[in-house]
Length: 337
Image (cartoon, rainbow, N blue to C red; front, side, top):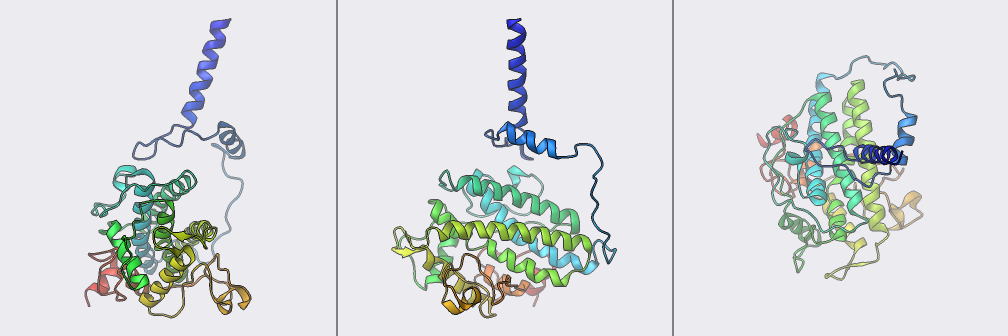
């Protein structure tokens, strides 16, 4: 009887370990701290093998993807590749080529990306967002096809150039996004917000029900990620970023101002604090979320986004995060002019 109980206990233990040790596409184990109770609750609420009982409404225009939907949605892969590589390397010390082999479609590996020195509060957030970006790339490729990953410069030197350009002088020592959690969060403030601008701008340009569904889903998660970054930074907005004696709020304000200058289309970006006239309903100076006069997300065109990402203010002059230019028909069309 004792040996039977021991064997049963061992079997139960192995099943619990197996339930939280599935591998990612690249063979990396899932977080072993996943509580089995949560897995069980989720399992009971799913249909598991049964046909779904809820069906989406029929689309008004029964075309999944129009030909003109493809290029604007593929353009977004440039930013998704950027975020995926930055988050994956920052959290796991490895990128798409190791975590999801083949997903980059043969594009060159990023320059200078490495594991960040993240604390226990920040690391789980970046791990989750990193894996979400893998899903985003997969969903875009499945819906409209893919483009190769462009060469992306995620080196500490490049982020230092961004901050120097934002402040108008060289920070000493140079800003290093991988040095600690606060620096990494400030670096996360630089790129992901542009994805929101891009998806808001893309939505009116597409008509297929599958592409609209895709962009809506992408926009929802990208906006959520940006909100988390801004909230984490907002909690520390009055804190000085060592060793510069410059507050977190001023860093965000300077980066937002830089993106506005490079985007060449007025105010479409705001830091964590704003003049009251730019706050919600012109009545508040805090600015956890960046939004326009009606509290709607700002839109940017591909040309405006490229001018920012290239750090040149010109979609025809590569540099910055894409030293050889972004990929896809839209981005490459500017380089031919």
